[in-house]
Length: 110
Image (cartoon, rainbow, N blue to C red; front, top):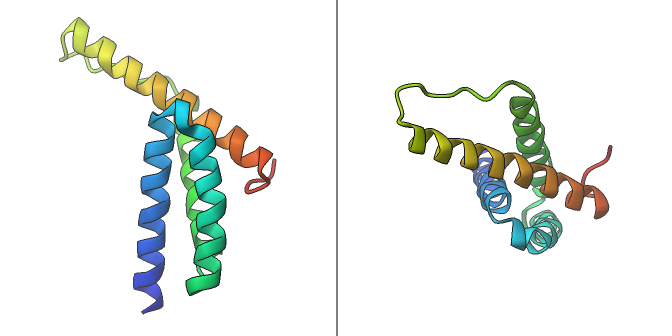
């Protein structure tokens, strides 16, 4: 069904986003993958727009989430708090890098 197909495409977009924002050294490859997936999904199952919309929504939502102050879990010990901070910062930088690479490839527009 169309709904199941769109849900699968959204899952793929979410997975690519999660991997790309966590692996900065591969961001070029992930951006190229996004371009190829959009094209292939459009040709094969007419879902390229769903992929793009899902990916752009994840980037936007992450960007908006990072505009607010990071919440520190006071129940964690200082080392665990530091690990959480590093994860947060890595993801934030990854999102900015992915957006920049997608803009450069014209998959997103300012």
